Length: 145
Figure (cartoon, rainbow, N blue to C red):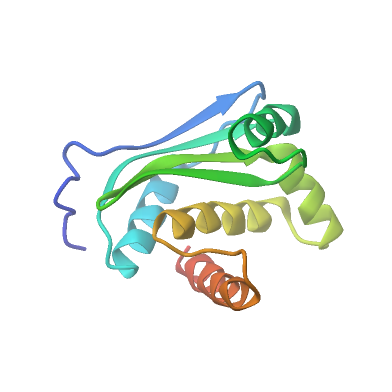
């Protein structure tokens, strides 16, 4: 794998807010995320994954997006080239979605993490055709892991 131009300065970091959650085997996830970004022919700056509770993410949704609903993920993009931003993921919502879809928690978490990176890469999910593309891209990303 070729190094990214900003790799020596850029960081992909994992944090948690208001929840006791730590991503196991972070090096595996860093490699995977870098592979997704490279596959999308992008470079990256700083990317923060913030794992949190429903209430924490709901507050972000209300404050910054004027939405009063629970969600599993919110992505704030700060730069398109290189891509950078904050990806907030509700662990409670991911667990609930996994249960509703009869999937293992880890598989749903991987889908949501890929979803956030794909948003940073420029993919949307507001229109039906965007959702179809996003789902196919998520599957491709998950197969890389």
